[in-house]
Amino acid sequence: MRLFTAIDIPTDVKEQILTLLNRLRPLAKISWSPVENLHITIKFIGEWPEPRLDEMKRALTAVPPLPAFDIEVRGLGWFPNPRHPRVFWVGVAGGQPLQALAQATEQAVAGLGVPVEQRPYSPHLTLARIKDSVPLESLRSSVSQAEAKSLGTFRPPAFYLYLSAGGKYTKLAEFPLN
Image (cartoon, rainbow, N blue to C red):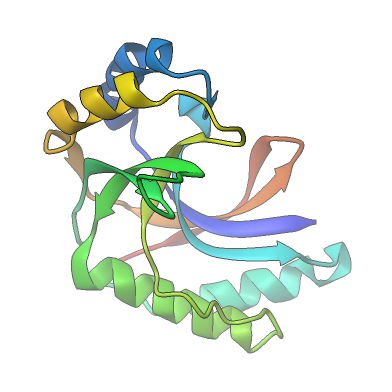
């Protein structure tokens, strides 16, 4: 089983993202993410044995509740950099509470032997993946005009444990945030 934890994006924010993507998709032939799959990954767990699924759920239940916090979706960018991008993303601002959730989740699953992520937590929504060298000038130009626009703010009620299989994500458990 390939697992990860994530926060869902509410419908109204997804609609704003879809409006943006409808403008951007014709500008570059890259692998655009389906809007229905967008989520804020908290922790990528990776391969996990199905017989130990309940153990994983118990560990995640131990993540302490947080005070309510808001997440804003805004800003566009490229990983690893704009010159040689592999990922096109929209930013996620959740401040210290989102960072605390990521750290607490990391600690909870590390106790089960899940490797600790060495890179700093960088929340984002992957809008597209770029596998081949393709012309991106039109997309870059449009991005610079839209990058400061907010696509919405929301207060997440929970985070979820997901199964990833064949490009499809299935919720396995819910963990309330407050």
